[in-house]
Length: 112
Length: 118
Image (cartoon, rainbow over all chains, first blue to last red; front, side):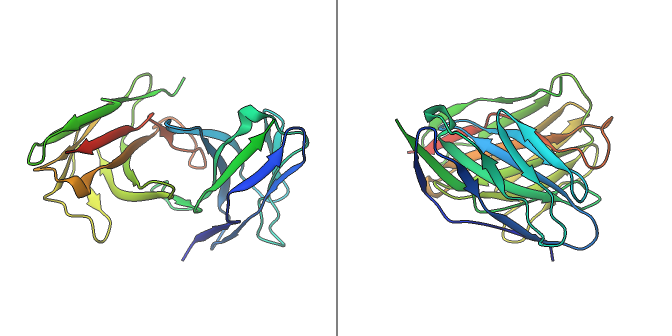
């Protein structure tokens, strides 16, 4: 079945550092891929998405490229800020009922 | 657009009480809504898929008599935690599928409800 694997956290970085959070997936067919962000005590917000191979999703300085050959969708940001501290979830959708398959989440801590 | 309102955002109640959580799509119609449960520092666990006008589909291990789901209209789904006990304390999140969106569009999420049972 479909699954998503994320790198374990927490990931702790200094402000302005480069960020990579790895995400790989297993899926049949051609899933859509998503990154969601959850700030402390809040619900989930869609950060970015990609719907086909080689698509690059981007938002708020974050970006991720849909790599079918490596079944990956790694999240990157060139210079993180303290306000980026949150939990990041990678997810895929390939089901006709639009269910999302979730990664375990990666907590990101940015220190000033 | 595509706003999902979840209410209440936080509830504390005594053991044995039943608690109802509402999930509303404010500016779109949602034939399908999802209910998730999130334990501290963990990912989301899908509890059930709610389809308007029909019975919800529960995931394995979720007690349908404990977690009653009603999806009576295209804009409202409710989750009732019946006779809640401390082990039901958790963060519950709903999401809605926009009827007008392409099949590869994401679900739209509510802000979650933090349930604490004393």
